[in-house]
Image (cartoon, rainbow, N blue to C red; front, top):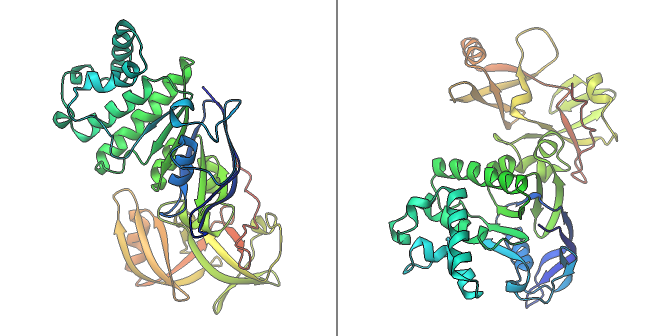
Amino acid sequence: MARVQLNNLEKVYGGGFKAVHGINLDIEDGEFMVLVGPSGCAKSTTLRMVAGLEEITGGEIRIGEQVVNTLPPGKRSIAMVFQNYALYPHMKVRKNLGFGLKIAGRPKAEIDAAIDDVARILEIEPLLDRLPKQLSGGQAQRVALGRALIKKPGVFLFDEPLSNLDAKLRASMRVRITELHKRLKERGLSSTVIYVTHDQTEAMTMGDRICVMQAGHILQVATPRDLYTHPANLFVASFIGSPEMNLIDGSMSDGMIRIGQQSVPVPAALDARLTAQPEAVVLGIRPQHLRLVTDGAPALEAKMTGAEFMGHEVNIHALLDGKQVVAVTSPAEYEAASRAGDRIRLRPDPEALHVFDKASGRNITRPAVMH
């Protein structure tokens, strides 16, 4: 196992394009760290620099106690699982698994024992005598995992390994990989993971912590729960969560929140959480925290424009001051609202409402106290 440290890491390409802007990140020994962000945010570039497949321009990469800036990939105690699996098509699974150890000159008995151990862990014993073309996508991905696992590296690097699989298989492989990580930790084996994905569901369900990146910068590093309950800024708020957070321009003054021509009092529960008082703000309301109101309590009026029936819940789409918003509610509440016409009243949960400074994009609400 190994700790990974990125210190002021930079990448500048020819022509002066700066892809990575002096980022700092500490990944603890045995941690499952996910790098997530949209295409072009430099998450894969960062991973490739850790792997030694991309030359760094500035800064330092440490794996364990060793600075690895100039070391070739084979000397970095890493194993990488790629998006396309990269299996040798002419070799059966058994040889694919053991090829790296064979090249390293390990004894045959040691290689055979390692293959059997990895095959047992990944439940691929029946596949050992098949060629890659005889494997399903999920089977091929498990073989690729096995080829990384058999090396017993200090750090596992995953570059969008599930993106070629269908939705059902991706869900299954997410569970397999996270369970494998836990088993390795329990056995005291190599288990430090850096996992790159653009899929927030993978990030939220797999990572011990998540590093959200945009345009070569790190915007927030936190646990999945902390990212969801207290995004540091507007970008993280909009990127994490499904359906995505409603972000509505407004203003705050004289104890009132104003959205267009409507206003509601600032709830005491929200006022106690504010760290600043800018006039121009963006209100962040997760769809799960936007309530349908049927009593006389203060609320915001909106026009319902559609609904998505999801089975156990309904996503209501509405226009609030010309802004499209989504509220998640129960089928019974949706039916009651729809019987009353397309005009609905919505109220944010004050314990879960976020206020962002419009000028800086910074979240100016403290996390709510969890009961």
